Length: 164
Image: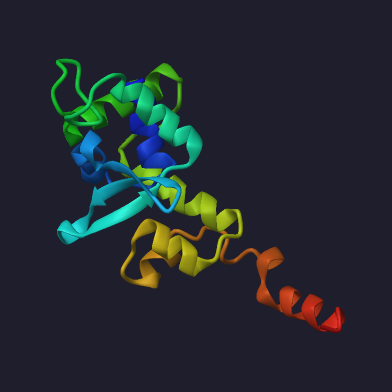
């Protein structure tokens, strides 16, 4: 369950590796009816990250009956560090027979951002979710920005044609 929680925290929450490895059970909570994780990001800034139900269940399975300590643990039961997390991800990629020459944790965060952009989530919302201070950082992830199917001219033309 630890492996799945690691992948979910990086790929579905967009956490940086140090944020995921630094997360504690005590950082889990509820805000306004949402399960959340208080993540310590760059510069020690604390942000609330909402947990989609599937991710919350995955984290709950990883912590099992424990009430304190790290969410992610290594094989010895101690806090997983970024090096152990990287080794686990490389092992998972090899087991899944993924042909990724230099697998690293940031690839999952990258996938988090690019998938949201590909799904049509606004650049501003993706920037907020990724906690990028500068929108230019988020724009670098947008693989489809040259895709003419998504060009704003079509959205404007459809809006104008609808008469609203």
